[in-house]
Length: 121
View 1 (tube, rainbow, N blue to C red):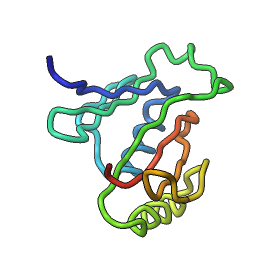
View 2: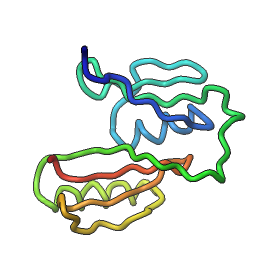
View 3: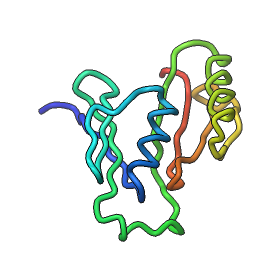
View 4: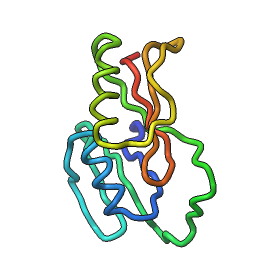
């Protein structure tokens, strides 16, 4: 059996979310349709946003999963990403701090889903 190769999050507006993630991760989509946009984040591995039947998403319902981005380098590399993202106007959920696994912070996407940056395990 192969490893999972599609990581999909539900969003209200694929255009808004695709622009958010494209800017955040500094990559363009590899596939775009009106309700589904995919980004190849590693060879053969996709991260996608999907509105599906967008009327089913209630913005008042908190999201309980996280999108994670592990970056190489020292703690200052995490702080540098934080500074770039704050300059883009992202909503900060957790300021940079030291956790058991290293320097980390959390922001939220337009639908309230969490995006965590941390060092490579």
